[in-house]
Length: 102
Length: 135
Image (tube, rainbow over all chains, first blue to last red; front, side, top):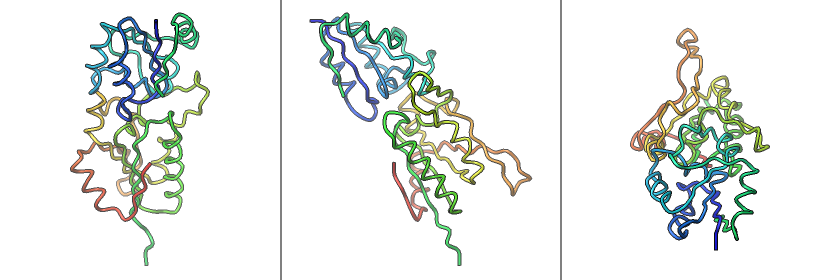
């Protein structure tokens, strides 16, 4: 079953992104929202983990939440895709279920 | 007798996911209005509060980041950012808002408020404080 995982916490404050990426199955989608968007940035202590997960899972980040936090597109790890609110809805519809890592 | 105390506010949370960052900023400004000797530290996810170009128009939350620029006018001129926290997040001073104040003891010269300090330096600064409030 295809799954969309949403992660809304900073990977430096909680371990939800790390756990999500550890247990996500091949082909799953992961969407970083709210403070989760910090996990999409290059050069951090979790960047290698996120980069490595891209071979297995599609990783998305919510544009409006990035902009709010001053996270520039140029700072994103290569391969992470930006979606808007409509894209969030599309991901929800495309997948059989949503696993919200709150 | 002077009633001025050394106050330190320690910020450890990212700006919009919780209300802590905004509340801290309000308390800092209140403390400054009472003419206390105020310092502010940004560690852990608190460093994200100072990122440049925050634009909250699409999320429907107030963008309070411009308020940090007003701190200098309230004589809050000692903003310490822990280097180890920046490094862990792949950030550097260039990613932060340029925050300045005018030094009245130096012909109103414009100076940087933000100082990037190591954990060891921050430990010393914390040791000197009389009141520490953590957010």
